[in-house]
Image (cartoon, rainbow, N blue to C red):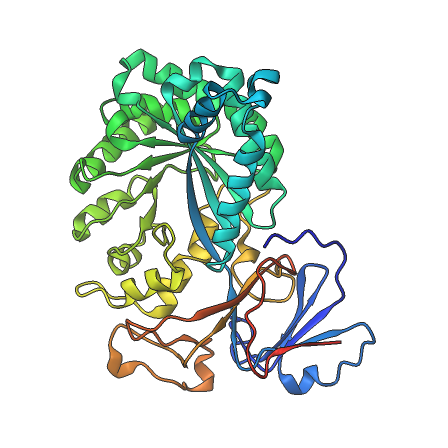
Length: 431
């Protein structure tokens, strides 16, 4: 599924619907050198006569920015598998201790990114879970991470590295801080491999009692800290801890580095007051699956969303749209997994916002979808429409009825197709 093609001729997409804020009623798009060169009408596109131009007939399909996903892989599980191979007499492991299973580990990473692309994702948070005891063998842990992220660097899907430390609750207070510092040090090489800063994720319940010290350690290490919520912590408890630690950090005149705010992963609350309190902490939230997205957005908390593992991103959008007590528009649900998600990612050269919109000059990272119908769908079905006043300039998105979802045709990243296109009657490309 992965493509490693070099130079590609310019490609003109026609006869479709291009989801572009700058040209909301566009039905054609030109891609050159991995960037979007032009967006407009089929009539204007027909005037192009370039000899090397590849014309792709979309057959009325929708072209929209690619989603941002989340991939979780367990390093301990991989290490255990290869320890078993070694015990069984794996000759390669005997010949080169510490390198056993490198090939299969890299293959697993590539397969996970292939699967993300097959869901319409152009970028992912690639999370490797590492138990605290593994830090005692720093060289082995470093090689495990390096191998994983080297494989990710060779893939077209844009990977944003995350390292999750598990088992912190079994360590003493001082040992927890030492483990966080050691993990942050391991990530220095990862930063260089992918050219973007790696984030450190910790189970929130393991560090709740010393949240201030953990946040300060992450800030000192110049790491984005992600706190993963679990059912063992109530939203109110988490918010109170964040409010207290933020107040103490302000008193100490210390804060997370610019562009790397603390992120709550999997937080949700039905209480508007809790969202409002969270707003004062400067923390960002990643909703996992269905949640109270409408309340978060109305309060103004920086929030993005991500589908559950293996779930279509459109299923997550639909779940927010059809939330029984806190529904949002399709546009809001879609933006939470595209534009909002891209803005939450750590990037050494700034947030890659141009990945989230199909406008001239932006990266040509998009997915092509077969859809039954397009609409401007609001939470109130009485105001959803298949055509709107052109003066509103609102780009269309799939109408989600709660049952039927768009079907992926292909995912394109930086102008290169990374999934095999689905054959459809009437659709295709011609020189």
